[in-house]
Image (cartoon, rainbow, N blue to C red; front, side):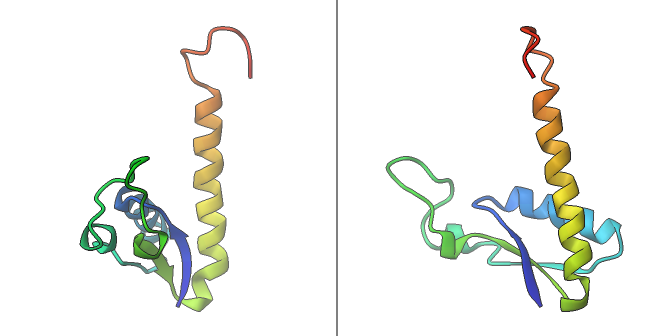
Length: 93
């Protein structure tokens, strides 16, 4: 098994897991409740999150390369959508 994604929130991990499973890749979330168990529900400036307690998405070794391609595609789409923000009326890209 290899880790392909981690985040301080379980929500992006669930999204990535769903994307992978929709493409036929079995994925597991480890540490799903880790940050809550460590006493941190959401990171704040005076209460930073603990990276060792973050949820992690894992896949089988043989699915690692394909999973990373899919995750990179999701991240590129998110970056593009941020650039297409309709509130950005100044013409800046």
